Length: 247
Image 1 (tube, rainbow, N blue to C red):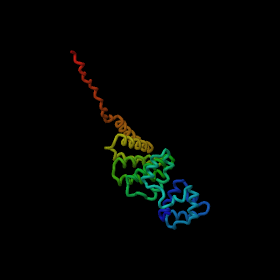
Image 2: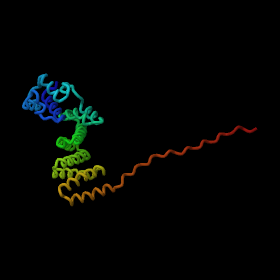
Image 3: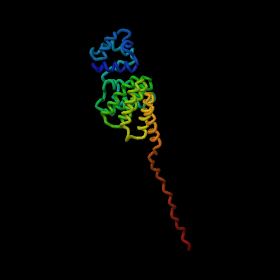
Image 4: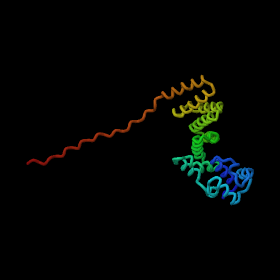
């Protein structure tokens, strides 16, 4: 069994993954205050009876709270990324991210945050998506790769716009635009689409038109020439064999 505070972090992640409030999870024998302290790690690991109650409410086996439970972040990420239904496989991923698993590997954590943010977007859980993208952006800046920073900021801007925070969406897209000058046409186009949408919502139509012109210029850029596949050399005719000697 996990010790505190790991038990509380796992409990909170499983509850949030199922969209339950603390009140809903506590129904049937626990107080909301007790559950809150349990999640925060200020109460010791509960008795078997309490664990069984939590498991029934969450629809998980008691092994979900085992110290050797589940997968590493790398395994959970691989399972979710390769699943035909990533949302169904995202539970372990969310729990491991919330517990801080594999923090020494920022690139692995980046991939997990990116995938889980996409799942939350598909589920329409935009506030949860936004929280993941905020962490993703900060992690991208720590890693220091421009492409990762720009892609995280672009998605963060779109999510802020979905939540109705137009000024923030404009600021995030503008920050991505400032960093995207030397990146690929695909990255620059994605940034400009987000920036134009945010500026249009904000009524900044002159700026949106200017950036639309920039987008047209990018889409008109010729694609890099692709090397032609090597052509097979024509078959060489075999030398004629000498006929039988004539006597």
